[in-house]
Length: 446
Figure (cartoon, rainbow, N blue to C red):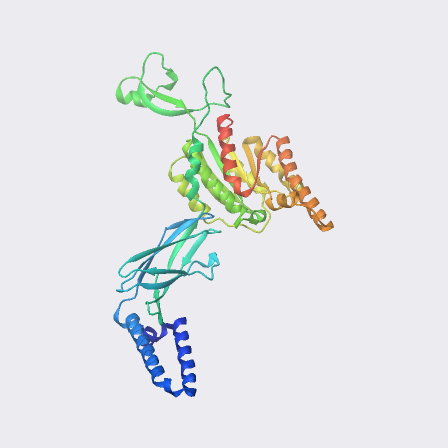
């Protein structure tokens, strides 16, 4: 750093400096008419210059500038409140007034971010604030800039701490834990109530010695040959089912509500549902599509599956073209051979929009249990219940009611063909989807 930058470039005078300097100017003008006060004003001005010089030397020459360090998590949660802290250490023997400016990421659109604090001598102060990302991706934090001054408050120095770092914003994972209790079944199966089961499969558990009454069809001949006695395979009822979250990335999923797009709400719900499915020992997978096929993750119940899905969802973006449901049907038939629960996150704004894709949805529902999740337009809901005071308000309210009614018609149309559906406000999507999954699980429909 050059001497000019170090001793002059970071120098700023304060409001107190201008007030005292202005008072001295007024005093000298007064002395023009009353020369007897001239010597007193000179003394006051010299004292002011001396204090200014002492303040400058303290801040720029004698003592070390405060030290700052930012603490932020390696990954942030999209749409949630994330904590950031800045620790500032005062290395001077007197109290400092500091103004901290943290160069937050450009995505936050914050242009007036600063915090004012006082730091006691030889102490460390931790300043905390929160940020709420509204989109996924890389967030670049910049430097930490501190403007500080002593108790004299004539001089202000700028200290820039190099603190550039990149932080990734992932789909919402902070509040995933609050849905875990929902995974514990509360269904009482006592008494003579019989639950209908669709199909039954067996899962290998262990190899054991043959005892009288064991099914001879389960004899393991290779193990028998190795040990010299009859050995049989032991099986248990398979409780693990297959669930796929299908995310539409078409143009209709770009609509924003409360700072997040519909795609982000679908991604957050998928991540929360993944956690619940793994707790229920179900195999969970996902795929995305728009006008072309996106990411595909085969269903699995390993604990690493959640991390794999999160890494894929982190990169998903909305396309601006119409989604290709014919291609989706073809890929499902080719990739998903076993009957599964398919949860399709999409959006239909009108009954005509559904009719164009209904044939493909019915074809998918013939081979899988299909649950279509789409969004209620909360802005239309507000307009439909608002009070109309003018002719224009009546027209707007009528159109809003018509569009909201078409959403309910979409639900009835899907139900007519045996397709399950959820119509949810964006902010309630996660809880509604998890509840529906647990309901289907309890009825043993999957």
